[in-house]
Length: 417
Image (tube, rainbow, N blue to C red):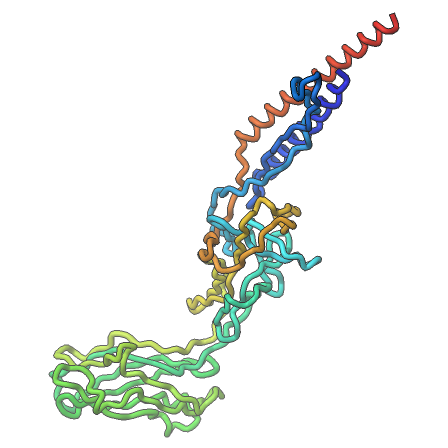
């Protein structure tokens, strides 16, 4: 009878622990990326009574319950105002580094922000790990992960034009001496725009001459305004005859009055990537359909956001969007072995498999959804049900203690009587 005290006490302790876990789950039902804990109860070794082995077995109560983290998917909610927020759909964890201990930790909470130097951080100040674009704009996702640094309040440097192309048609019915002009905007090394004008003149059927000129007022030496000249020869089917037409056309950049770098080369491609001419001569009015060049003016950073797939995208005032980083994901084969360390972070334990770090959507890793957050997976109905069950269990075992105490007093009274 007297073991009933310790048996009931073990149940009271275990149930109290379970209620604590339910309380923690409910307290974090609004915590981003929080994963609820489930309880796993087990009995203590039994005591055999009587002559036959196991004929009567009396247990010693319940052991301290084990907590098992439920890593099931939480609901994904869009956050239009949180451009740097990210949610993982599927397996995996964001990789973060604690700035005070330099420990690598893992989290499902993707409410990110930047510090004054542009380093991507979690809401509690951990550095988000991934890859940052180098000076050429390329990202090596095979390199080790490190802190992601994004541009903050910076101008994007201008890019001088080095390549251009123009798609247009020259009227095959035009008379000799007919002129047609087309203008392409180019940029110098300081980001100043200049109008490059192409003048086409029909010399004879299927043969047009051209000149390329810059505004004389933009140049230190106005006599260098004409930067290129040549001839375009067409086949009887109206396409460029590259056996008689030089491509690409290259010309030297003259000295500009704004002090930009001069002496560089601009390449005018008369053929597309498939080798087809971009200028035709058909029986249609002369007209330009499109033009392109690879230069750009200096532009102001407008915002930085996390795109689908984990790309960090910087948008500039000229409408250009540049990938400046990539967020890494870690896949862990046995996430149940992770140890919670607070702030929705987890660390590896001795039982944890080695994390496999890579890009979203590869190697069994889930996908990152930009401008979104994963909500807690706490089910309030389940937690309330568990709370009632644990409450009833606590009350029942309390009744066992009261009953055992009454019987003990009766026994003492018998002895004293």
